[in-house]
Amino acid sequence: MSLPIVVQNITKRFGRVTAVDRVSLEAREGEIFGFLGPNGSGKSTMIRMLCGLLTPTEGDAWVLGMNVRRDSVEIKRHIGYMSQQFSLYRDLTVRENLYFFGRLYGLSRSANSERRKTLCDYLGLSPYLDQRAGALSGGWRQRLALAVSLMHEPKVVFLDEPTAGIDPVARRELWDLLFDMSARGITFFVTTHYMDEAERCTKVAYIHLSRLIACGEPSDLKSLPDVTPEGCRRMEIRTQAITRLLRQFRGHDSIRSATIFGEAVHLLVENSFDDESIRQYAAGHGFTWIQIRDIPPSLEDVFISLTLAEERRRP
Picture 1 (spheres, rainbow, N blue to C red):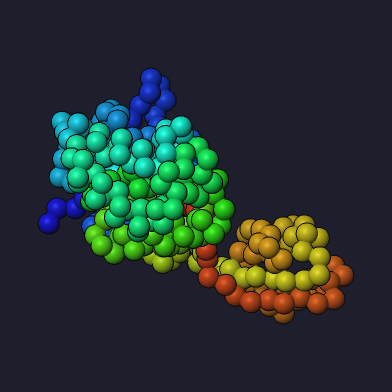
Picture 2: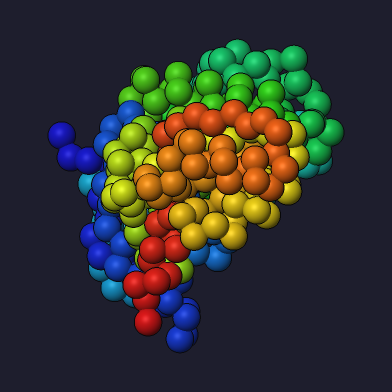
């Protein structure tokens, strides 16, 4: 069986600006593929090319076996797309929005009604069928947008920052739904800024300044050499005044990086700076107690490390 998404050396330029630069990737059936990067890095441009909304300047891509250059109209009929901004009709009810978009996808009246009932029962939208979309909370609007993207039973769905602006409970519930649907064989291509969401993806790709600098399973990315360089380790320190500790430790030659995470400081430390040396250094600066433990890198550590390494390599 062919892969649902295949991208080969795709590039998109707008005049002199290169938005996406020679990106290659693949997504398998039933994967939640996370596509991450800073604002302006090319994430939305990539999604629009894969949806057949933009034509690549160079390279090629296939979605469900259809070529994004030759088959852009056909691709739109077979994929789902949920935009970054809520783009449904706010003055229409949930029922009317689903009916309208179902008919656009070519569903008959009976098939439209049956599919609407199935999705509303599954996504919990049934109590809101006669409520105007504009009156829904952020989380329920996103569920409605997801329902619209699924009306025609697509096998690939593109979600452009689907949880932006909604509360943590709604975010978690939406991701639980994505997991359930991916287990049924739907492939999701998701852009997100949230590292906890990236951790939950089957595979993650990271784009920076238009170029793909990492792609793989989260556990594999955490093992890359640039993330925890040879001769270094990552650790967490807790103490009574973490902001002052941060200032002191950032000035030490053996500390490669130091960042506050909640009530602790996360550090990338050279192995020569062992726990006892750290305790002595802290005591010498007035810290009466500290707790030290080694920690694995997070995906945030991964992307910060890879971004800095990529910037050092570029002229």
